[in-house]
Image 1 (tube, rainbow, N blue to C red):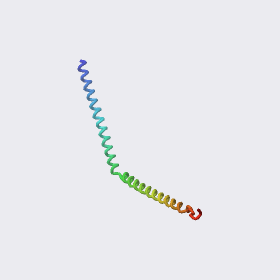
Image 2 (cartoon, rainbow, N blue to C red; image 1 turned 45 degrees about the horizontal axis):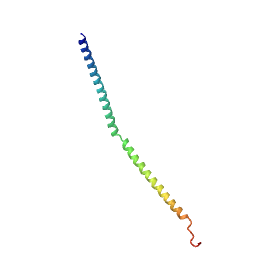
Image 3 (cartoon, one colour; image 1 turned 120 degrees about the horizontal axis):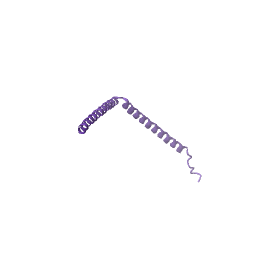
Image 4 (tube, rainbow, N blue to C red; image 1 turned 135 degrees about the vertical axis):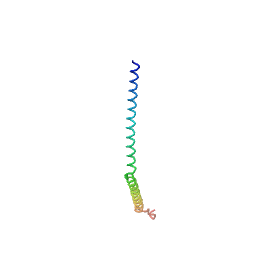
Length: 92
């Protein structure tokens, strides 16, 4: 009788394990479907394109500002060199 009882408990345990397996496979499948839908939605979104365009604009603007600053510094250096008194060669 104990062998028979053990056999039935084993079947119930196997049935529960199969049910749990099916449950988690279904949960994983639903989550995968949701994730794929979200990825699809994001890939169709214009947000990434806009971010890329704004990044390019900002980089271009930063280069313009750097070039302008560099040009101003060069002009200031030239002006300071021109305003230095020239050595008087007749004084010696």
